[in-house]
Image: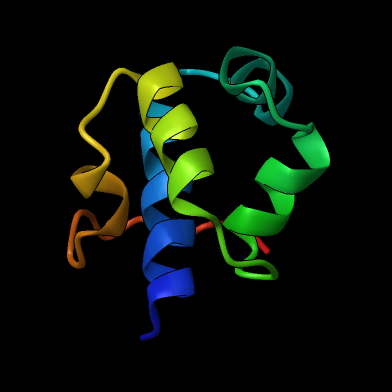
Amino acid sequence: MDLKEVVARNLWRLRQEAQLTQEELADKAGISSRYVGAIERSKVSVSVTVLGQIAEALAVDPCNLIRANQGDAAPRR
């Protein structure tokens, strides 16, 4: 599994745990909801800056977004 897929799975899981929609997360992180969706589908690579914004919006350590094996739930594609 490549890093884009790891980030996609972790982002989806953490967003679900936070009970946020893609739109709500996007607003909190200062990015577009389309970008959140593209990240969750492994369609784009996320910059370190945006990774930090997303982590802050989710109130998690950025490492939680890039660490493999953070949960078994897979994103819906």
